[in-house]
Length: 180
Image (cartoon, rainbow, N blue to C red; front, side, top):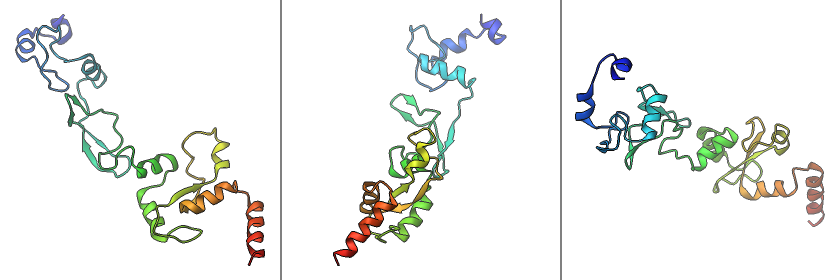
């Protein structure tokens, strides 16, 4: 079988090394394996034709990171999208995934403040037109074109409670004007 598959017989190389060709972990002798420590490493080797990627580029910050880091006894996954600094659960990654807002755009918005009240001392929320993306199938992420601006939490909730209705907002303005 080795002769047919590799063009040579290599029993000594495999028998003396007993190291996984994917992750470098020692293969347990007597396990029936010689080249791969597990089924996962065997699948990785066949998927990448023994040329597994060694680095990736973060989708958010654009930095190149190594995939050779070990977590326990396993290598980092090859489908990684975010570097450790950006973190997949961080607010900036969630803003980017859901609304397409880059960290630079958000930093500019934070500098200018809430677009209604002008507050700069609180984190801003991404305000988007809900009717736009509902027509596109109601997916969790928006299309990115419907982002209206950046609002503080209070202003964002106020608009949300008025259901983005201009008529209702006009009546609220009239009501507040009467009381003065």
